[in-house]
Length: 308
Ligand SMILES: NC(=O)C1=CN([C@@H]2O[C@H](COP(=O)(O)OP(=O)(O)OC[C@H]3O[C@@H](n4cnc5c(N)ncnc54)[C@H](OP(=O)(O)O)[C@@H]3O)[C@@H](O)[C@H]2O)C=CC1
Ligand SMILES: CC(C)(CO)C(=O)C(=O)O
Image (cartoon, rainbow, N blue to C red):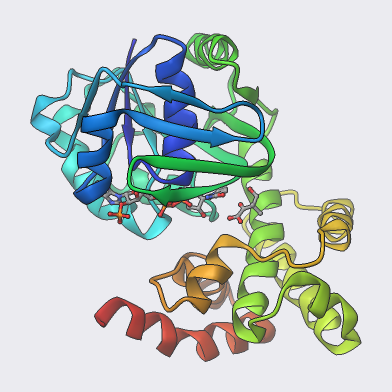
């Protein structure tokens, strides 16, 4: 099994590192100082579940050097998927599985613009991790977990094989009955806290302390549920309640990664979060005024981050 990890950031670095450590034939695509550091010293993963260092079979920025992959795990940001898909095309065969782990609800759709259905899996992950310095990944909280499945939700042989691979690598994993629902459950949680968090620039506890802001948070989530339902995704009241239980239980000081990108003036996943909600809702004739307000307030900042 040739595994290609494209993007060795917090997510690609942690899960790719675990697969390489388990002895799988892992190639990694990275760039810049990070690439040089991994080439020289290997990939170092500092984790609350046990730190380790690995040398992947191949670390490069040149896809032409990579052995034909059976599995590609995408560790880039969601807005990078279209560009990365174009780069990947020459190495993808009819048998290759492409697994996106990004936050966001339309990563599968973006992949399907470039690849046939058979190549694309649905996926997401839970972890809090980041590049600490070139060659070093830090995992600081959450039990890391990959949720994955066929986009038609069938329990195929290749999905069963993938489960064995993740199990052998010591990666907690979950093949749900409905991968679209899982993607939207995560999206409901992450898009809700990221947008308003980015706009208010305060951590979750400060939002919880304000009745006004907490109500806005709830309205953001209700609009996401409305959109999901209009798209045929059975996101239910109980999922919304569960997401808010998690929001209620987040420790003081918690911020989401997209919120941190927005606050730091880095390009963010705004377009894939609130931007996607607003545009998709407009197509379906659904009103999403709270998400629109958040999106339009943050849009100039995100644009600036991309041009500066
Ligand atoms: N980090 C986390 O805790 C979690 C993140 N997620 C989601 O996972 C996705 C990835 O996030 P995260 O890992 O944090 O992102 P990072 O920015 O840490 O990692 C992305 C990596 O991809 C690299 N990359 C992008 N394009 C290329 C390219 N063309 N060639 C080589 N390398 C490339 C980036 O390099 P460079 O720095 O040079 O741009 C960077 O190292 C996002 O959708 C995020 O929302 C989900 C759950 C948790
Ligand atoms: C909320 C969390 C940490 C869960 O994986 C996440 O996805 C993010 O911050 O982007």
